[in-house]
Length: 295
Ligand code: NAD
Image (cartoon, rainbow, N blue to C red):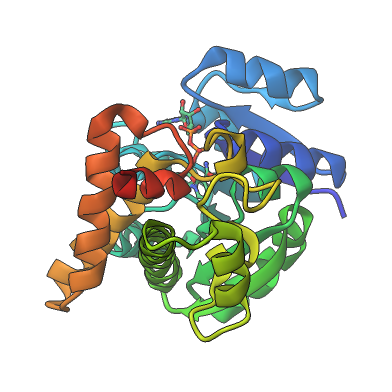
C-alpha cells in the first residue's frame, strides 16, 4: 500500500524517519524551514514543498517532527494555521517531544475541525531513527492508532498505546526523567567506589549483577573505558545530548507543576544536567554527568 504522506521537520530525527517511509514505498511531500534539509530528501526521491501548507495538500497522512512545544503550537495553531490547510478526516502523527498540555491543546483544536491526531513521541535516538527501530509512545484514539500502525512500523519496532491525547508525551517524559536520575545515580555510585579504591570495571560488573543494576550499568556505562561502545569511551560523543536530556527534564518539571506532583529527584537531576550544560558540555552525551563527580 503506497500512501501520500506530508512530512514536516527534517532534522536529526525527521530526515531518517522520512527516508524509511520512502524506502517502504510511500510518496512523500516534505518541508523544513532549512532548504538544504528539503533538498537532501528530494535527492532521495521525496517531492520538495515550498511551505507546510503546500506539503499537506492532498495528503492522507501528516507527520511532524519539530524541536519543541512552541514550534508545534506555532505550526498548527499560530499564524501558519496548518489545521486550516489539512483536509477533514486526515490522520496527523505529531512525533515531537513536547509538553503534554501542548499536545492536548493541539489535539483538541484538530479534533474540533474533524482532523484525527495522535501524539507519538519516540525513544531510540538518531540511531533508532536511521535503523527504523524507534519506540513510539502514542496518545489518542485506539482506532486512529490502528490506522497509523503500518506507517509506524516502517519507522519503528515497538509501538505502545499510553492512553488518551497527551498520554504519549506523559509516558515519554516519565521514562526520560527516570533515565536522567538513573544515569546520575550510577555516575555517583561509581565515583564513590573509585574514590574508595575500587576499579570502575570491577564495581560495574558487580552492580550489573546486583540489585543496583539498571540500563546504564548494563548497556551505557558512564565511566570511560568500562564499555568499549558506550559514548563514555568515545569522549562522550554521539548518543543522547545533555541539552536534550535537560529539555526533557524541563518538561517533567512543567508536568509536575501542572499536576502538583512532587518530583524531588527529577528536579535534582534537572539541576545537575543544567550545571553540566552551563559548563559548556550541552553537546556531550548525557552520561558525561560523571564529570560533575570528577576529583
Ligand atoms: P532537530 O532540531 O534536528 O530538527 C527539527 C527540525 O524542525 C529542524 O530541521 C527545523 O528546521 C525544523 N523546523 C522547526 N520549525 C519548523 C516549522 N515551523 N516548519 C518546518 N520545519 C520546522 O531536532 P531532532 O533532534 O530531529 O528532534 C526532533 C524532536 O524529536 C524533538 O522534539 C526532540 O526532543 C525529539 N527527540 C530527539 C531525539 C534525538 O536523539 N535527537 C530522540 C528522541 C526524541
